[in-house]
Length: 512
Ligand code: NAD
Image 1 (cartoon, rainbow, N blue to C red):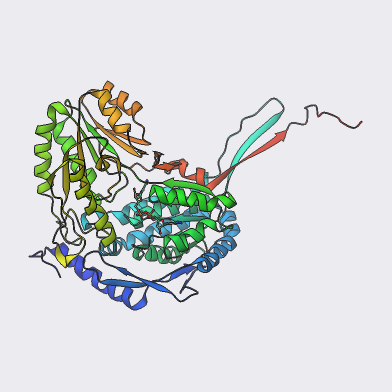
Image 2 (image 1 turned 90 degrees about the vertical axis):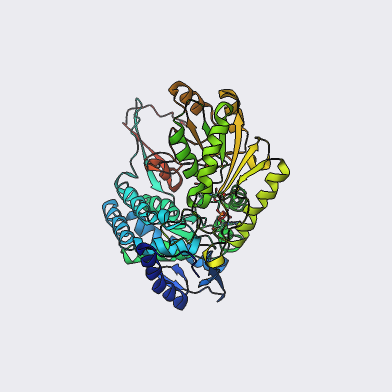
């Protein structure tokens, strides 16, 4: 199945590690985790999850529907009060134990994520560690989650506090699914909410493992429930369930709209992390070598299947030819290969439907009148899976579809600009507003552009480097609400105001 030879020690070790895990997966299948028990769907229905490397069936997965979601939501509702009322220091201890359990299995999680999603091991090796960090960070916030403010007036003490909103639904996508799920689930549990998780149907494997690790760590039954299945079935039922008080969702903008409509009849609170078409703007006074490294990393790492990827390069005309020449050389040299090979930089895309979607943009680029400078075709990789050539498209303008639509693959659109105002206008002329990256040696300009960009997160002279206390989220069609630090609690908690009279104020006397 594998054409890359000879295998390095780590490559062989990864293959050896994953083989028994896959054997067990194939034998056991994947069930829902509801109320602390692994169960089949009430209907008995299943679906198969396959590997993007070679199409091999990885497991038969329980296909949840509204009945299964109802069971899970009921379990989450039953578990809510004891979990909410547990001393925060105890919740903290338990969430640290989850982090320990994740760290213990980090190497297994990495290889399973590779075969289920096609992501390269060099990136997935750290995914479980980052997931454990998410649990540790929010574990330490358990004890302050309910903190509020005292805002006294003349006659009253006015105290605010925060209380967990109730059982919540978490719906996640297939790109870096393990890390992303923990990013949503850890703060919900720290807040004192119970959770029903609906992972993406294209990547159920590590979500199953997460549910088991959480149980193994001693989190009470029913606090985290996982229901597998399709978006329009299990996902929709979760967003409509009356016991579920809020939905934390990561996925496409169009799905976010659908979820908002589905949840509207029972006024579901929503928190959305959605798509992006993020600009990286490189001015002619930038540190070109560092900018080049960041440009390549932010679109070609993680297969370009990354919401924060800089999928539009806005390059100043005066340096465009020089920069594009260096860029093209780097893109041509990217290593497409088996995800378990540590040398691989780009693995197969998640699913044949996603491969087809990405490939349609090769024709769109040509029809738009842009030039495919590198790539532009599928790639014959080991296992014969959903590989695509890393692609660089030049000569684009901001109005083209390849400059407006999220491709979500290793596909970079290059647009030249004249000056600062031109760059800002092009950067903002999309429906999305997740991230922006600016490269310049002029700090005044960097700050002016940062102010002007319509995006929730801006990095100046840097690629995306995540710091957990900072706010994460998008403007416009890229999201509603923020994650990270204390911001995560805005979705999972209600702010409650308590006013305590000093007993001295005059109360109006009626009916005397
Ligand atoms: P998707 O919207 O197709 O699916 C995401 C999840 O929603 C899946 O679990 C799916 O089953 C479920 N779903 C689908 N329809 C539903 C419905 N009607 N009701 C309830 N649930 C439903 O997204 P995807 O293709 O899995 O992921 C890629 C997208 O996610 C990209 O647009 C990417 O930019 C975005 N994303 C955003 C962030 C961020 O932080 N902003 C992070 C990662 C990914």
